[in-house]
View 1 (cartoon, protein in one colour):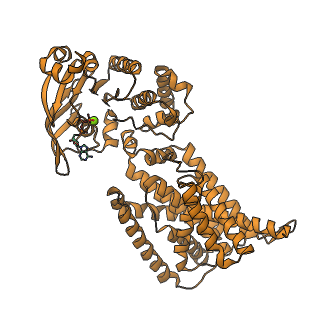
View 2: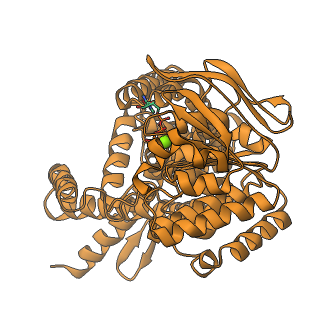
Length: 294
Length: 238
Ligand SMILES: Nc1ncnc2c1ncn2[C@@H]1O[C@H](COP(=O)(O)OP(=O)(O)OP(=O)(O)O)[C@@H](O)[C@H]1O
Ligand SMILES: [Mg+2]
């Protein structure tokens, strides 16, 4: 086996995995805290990319500098979506109705994107990105390296917030025992809205990074929802570290199977890994961060 | 009256009636026991009082203000704190984090520190194990933690729903001793218990709930001697 090719594949997988992790962490958070599968997650990711595009086109803001603005906007959007549409589904604690509602929301948002930006493929570019560079014989693209670093940084921040801020503690408490959390003075509705907001904000940040690396179109949302789902099954629910592990695993499986078997077959490997994980560790590598069911 | 006044509360789960006109009072600083067999409606009464359930009819008043209709997270800010049946600690969080959740409403950091210190003085075992996750504690220790978490909220009325359920006798004694001490600090206690003898000994007054109705009330000592109570709730022990 060619050593350089192996390392190149490894690095590519790492970078792809970092992006998967960041794009999936919000999905994981919502599943962990609210117990619902948010089918609108992929569209949150795309909205990040499109918002970055709009900010660049209308105000000339560099996409990397736009990340905080995009996060703030998506936080508001996510929280509003929860308070208006999803709250009803959660109150009835029906998985089916939450699936229908979030799927419906994703269709509406996708059509809104098409209406505003058209159905064509778009790109993001940043003047701040360094060119391609080499580590030994391995070629690293500047945008991709920046993406990986940003992913790790943001995941680290989220982890700090969850484990060291009062609101993070309240989120974890609500995830574990919503009734007791209420008795402690926590307004679960507010925590649910905040969770949705944070989830959408992180999805939006990942959307910018994805847009800098790959072209995107309004129809990619199902791809990102599916990836988030796979990442969570592989890594475990609710924690940024779980999302990181799951994402990296997914990234490596994708790149290695594409490189050594053929890109047509990477889904075969991904879903085999998924099946294997469901059989061996049904709650993923790290289990559920809130339920302790490993 | 200044303490808790529950006035002819009705509650039904869907169509199933659970409370049919429950009325009782807890005066400031008083320990009141609420007895009743399984399914009598004790937990439902506790939940309605703490705001976790809204009564269909009737009212809950605390310190002269109506609290019925408020959600639990607002009722607790009025001073009524429920230590729920089955403990419900946050199993994947550390003991210290569990305690901090009890002080969630408190914005002053210095006060949170004081409360934490007070908890650890009352429950030295929790201090030793403060960075372990709560799920690693024994059932009795989890009950202590649930009570400590409730006290972190600085209640003026503490409702305890079956604190001795499934706990070994030595710890049960400790819990009843603790209830005495809590009452000694001026906090009113509404004690829901299966252990009728021990609760009638700590309580100044008691109510007996059956099928959603209060069927008997009286002084704790007097009920201990009551023939009906002896047959129904103390029978096995006599
Ligand atoms: N969530 C619920 N849905 C439907 N019925 C309920 C629910 N919770 C309680 N009940 C019913 O309401 C009645 C009162 O229940 P409750 O839990 O208040 O009794 P309890 O006195 O606390 O009993 P225990 O000693 O077993 O804890 C029972 O008939 C019970 O079956
Ligand atoms: Mg009960």
